[in-house]
Length: 498
Figure 1 (cartoon, rainbow, N blue to C red):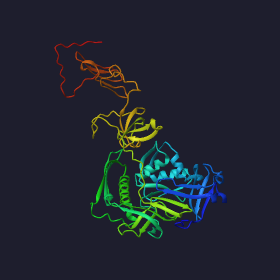
Figure 2: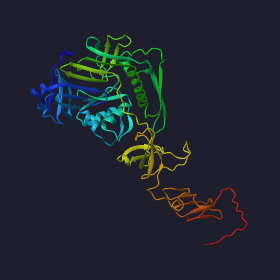
Figure 3: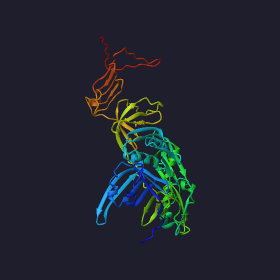
């Protein structure tokens, strides 16, 4: 019989608030706890006696303690029985409260919030506290649409290089610099049974610059950073001088504040630092080894020894191994950033821009009537004190462009016909050019023979055609040129009274 790698600690499992029966405890052959930044923790229990597990069912609460320390709390989400030549086994999977965020999808618009604010909102829904270990920049407006609640939080936090994780009953946002707690020493040949440690100097970045623009005011900004957050907690591994250090440039981004732009650049530097030095290993079981904790690896090559921040762990308790913990410091995979332009139908809910900048407030009917906030409108010849000012009005349908696929950051391309009645004049000649104001004034270039017509809602008009020019006044007509000359020249002049 092979001896266990490490002693097996006392494992206490509670199901539906009650310690499992001695028969079920005796049938428990393996326990696995998976934890990772940005993911719901999963507890997997394998039982060798299905008869002892006949009371198990999805939805029951599950808690686990190792030597009296709580390491997991959640509910059963999966139950499976396997029958084969090796006998019958029952596999149970329970997940922590973050799975509820991963299963729930909400349509919402939130103004003036940060990732930390969103974490607090979602945590309150779960009856939990929240904590962000790093500053989180405010966003003027964020919209949740096709994302689950967890994806919404992960996407918003990920832009600042942060990851959600549930720890000790608290929803936390943590960077790749970890939790800042005292490092755990791991020595190869002692409490570190096996490891793979790699240093990839070609992935190192010694700085970054981001060029961005405010999505509303269009104000440009540029920000630069030189240090990854991990520099605060560990001595970064020396990448050497060959290949030469690199600088990353992020171009054409949308950011409402300097803090938001800098957070995006910071996330890039943090990931580069994590990708430069990666450690994975099998260690003596330790419940303190969890995502966000720093480990000090020793007993390996001097260039590879030092500090690493854990991002993923797997705790395993079994008769063959006792209690061991697998860990990795590889940066978590991110959901692909949209950054693909998108267009959508919008409806103007307000045309009275409080700042007088010609913007209109847009709701998105195909996004559950979410309020997308104030957006700039594209106009012909728009510039400082010039341009064609024909802005959409309240109630108009418009086409909206979202350059990065974010429905909270768009520009109004223009109004849409198709569901609306054409203005008078345009209906008679839909392929001409007719401008009609809300007050009824008309400029009609759609007539035949190059004719032009200007008319008021009161009936006065000026028509210029190939054979006749007509001025008709529906009110008193005054022609004057104070202190100037009026000249009327014609082959014949006729005055009529009527």
